[in-house]
Image (cartoon, rainbow, N blue to C red; front, side, top):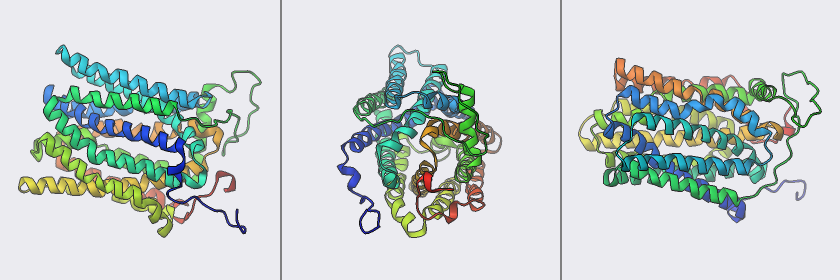
Length: 438
């Protein structure tokens, strides 16, 4: 405090925090590897195994299906005192599972069944990592730095979208998709090492009053409340807290519609309808992702200019709307490539504007003792809808065509902002600690 005014850290202050920088490096490397696998796995299914649209959609769905268990995994994680160790183990597990693909490829035994299994197992480990991450992040940086920290983490994620698909497309074209997956496995190993060296003071789990729920005395046993009760408390908080409820309705809607296409069917559309090579597809995704970098870097400034709530509303519309441009892509190859890249640019800008500000706002309203439970409950609905969206998208693409499916994704996704307009979110200009909210 100085003269009654709270001094907030400047944009560069987190770069002087060695713990944050170490964690940021680990996440940046991991994100880069993910971009390669996101392109390599569907290309492996389409190219080497001749998968259909429904089979590619199922592959995408299986990655997100474990989020349906997030309600209970989050409740379990919330009672574990070592969130950092859980994140480390989740990274190492994902690396081991991914390495089975190049090994099977070396023996010419890669199958769709193995791809489905890899998708399911890595997706489960991701849920454990993400539910532990919510508590870890909240204690890694101070509340006044949430937006800046999310901006920096999202910026590196955006850079991975720029370089990762281009490199991934080149690796797939030069070395085959299974070999390219090795890069993602190694990125998880690097993340595990850096996360393991990033220590934070994690509070001991304690009971927290939940809005909308009658307090019940906690049993005086070492086990504490049951897993089912802890899961219910997380879900109850999400349902009754106005910011969490509106955010969940919005993101669940936008996730359902954008996952009608997903990365897999976008790759299929670019390959079979736009007739672009793997290298060109990777280049379009990479160039388009510069919009994500711009959105991540600009999000704090935009939030200061128009308010964090309005920034979230704008992002919710700009994220899905460009799918209509992809659906309309036609003409010579340079035009098809340019349209795909431009749509990806706008969509990436919108999703970063939405994510950076909404994640920061939600982090500020969740009490410490509920973070992993709330993250698990939130992801059960928000991410759990993604497999359904992917499966519906595969069916819609089969029945009506890929272009119609993309247009439905654009219109339906943009309507997600309606949930925000009926909530307190548009009127919120700055973050406040959870203790300051009524």
